[in-house]
Image (cartoon, rainbow, N blue to C red):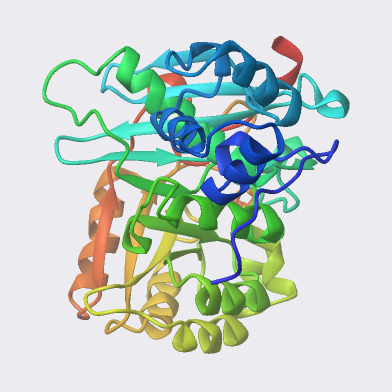
Length: 364
Ligand code: SF4
């Protein structure tokens, strides 16, 4: 794993969400503060408290130092929407001078036994998959590592301040990089955020609980596997090159053969699988020939297929396959020994479901 570092943002100050304890200790030393203060600040940070004024057991002088030396709150919560199923969608604005007002979205998907946070890695996306609402926004900015990790920390704090009703899990246990943007097109932000999420003085998450989803940037997947070996999900959506060229245009650069070789090399631990995401679009990628191509592509020993219901957004050019057709599609894969699941869509009523995220930057 590369060395830990807190990514500076555009004015080169370290960011509190990703700073390491040893970097904070250096800062304490520089300002004549006792070393134990660094641990106190880290404890607050890991609870999601990023505003030094809310860190109750640290002196006023240190609050002033933190505010002056660090970017403590790289994001600002603009809006939170709650779905009837417990899903929460958060809209955050970037606190950067040049990008002030630009927004990203994150989603908390709670279940009884886990709390998954889906985070964004870019404002908009560098790629333009035609079925994806984010893709229609165009690319606006890469998020810094601090901005990526702040999404997790601020959702953690929100869960603490306002726990979920019923028997839903109230902790963040899993992270998926499946929000806005192509994480592997923001490699620095992704790698530095992973270091912070995995580190002992950060959230200390297991690599088995973090999933990076990519449209298939082959060299970057290789580097991700070598450096972090987290779970991998691929936005496959077709196993036919000519169709995938349209649905996932990065396929023109890294076609299926290259992707296949790369997936075969990705190192997996025991009981781990690569997930192949497949959104079912009516009469587009749900035909007999599509199933046959998918069956040929999948390596059932190492991969499973996650079939996703298409979530329409205003003006989307596709329709989703019917529920019956999705089940039939899944059964055909299962009959060939391929693990296939149909993903239950969450948060659809608040446009928080897969492929529906798009920051409404003009509506702040
Ligand atoms: S599907 Fe992913 S990679 Fe494609 S445009 Fe949407 S966010 Fe970007």
